[in-house]
Length: 47
Image (cartoon, rainbow, N blue to C red; front, side, top):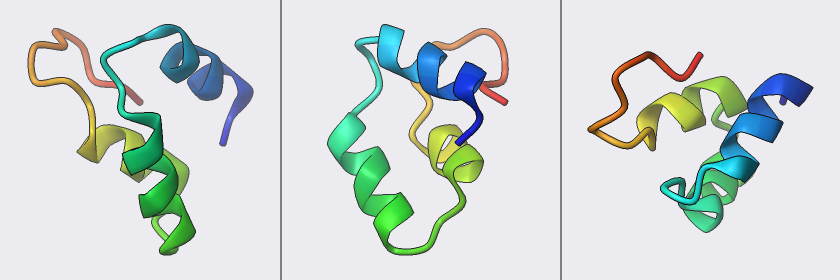
């Protein structure tokens, strides 16, 4: 995962880190996992 993306996800309490790691463990690219689990009220795309 890119350091900037990891920092942003770590700072945003709306992200479910356990769900994110589960997707990554199953082979999902980190950037896609973050997009899949992005909060619906996020006004800008996460990537």
